[in-house]
Amino acid sequence: MSIFIHAFWKDRGRIPGMVWWDFKKRYLSSFIGVAWGFIQPALSLLIIGLAMRFGLRMGTLSDGTPYTPWLICGMIPWLFISETLHASTGSLLEYDYLIKKTTFNASLIPFVKVLTGLMVHIVMVSGTGLYLWLTGILPGIGWLQLPYLLISATTLMSALGWLLSAANVFIRDIGSALGLLITLMLWVTPILWPADVLSPGLKPVAWLNPFYHITDGYRKALLHNEWIFSDMTGTLYFWLVTLTLLSASMLVFRRLNNHFADVI
Image 1 (cartoon, rainbow, N blue to C red):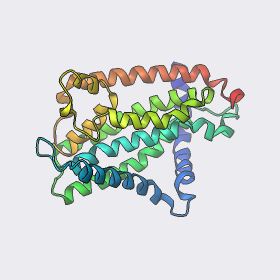
Image 2 (tube, helix red, strand yellow):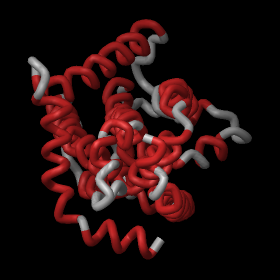
Image 3 (spheres, rainbow, N blue to C red):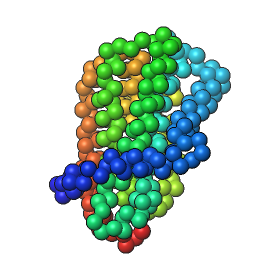
């Protein structure tokens, strides 16, 4: 782990240029350009929102919270999570020409994918804040927790990015199965439906999902101005899982790093 961290810190100066290059490659090379980064999640929100609003008639929740703002506040971080998982998992194969350079630090590539997704995510969060303000939900002190939530999501996605990208080089089925897994997690995590509908015996299962800490945190911060750290047990559990996963991903990536060029 110390070797991994030292090498990553030593090459940190390359990250801004790589993020900008990846951003241009992903968006600016298309005809519509960077608008694709916002059109796709906006359409996803629209389709899901219409289906839940008119199909399942989800107008308001049991506590009186309007369903549409509640859905948006949970879907925005989830779109960041799902998009980043897709991008980072296949990142080493996408930039195979860099992997074959013996002097290049491959650990930068998955992290760059996370930061590229974070750029779009910050704009989406800003747009969500504007939408809430226009619908009468004014900014409160809870919004000051957004930097913490961004750091939490970035740390978790970096850990998953390093782990999945390294494993995907050797087991290509991971990339193929990832879409199914993300769809499953969307319905298992209380994002489209409130956790209150679960029976007391199943609520701890949702609580054990680290993604729930992030999506629920966005809702507490943006909609209810609640202090996330009031549930210190959930916060400590999230960081225990995230830091354990981060340590494991560093070790796995470091162990497999020397074999990437041979397999690719």
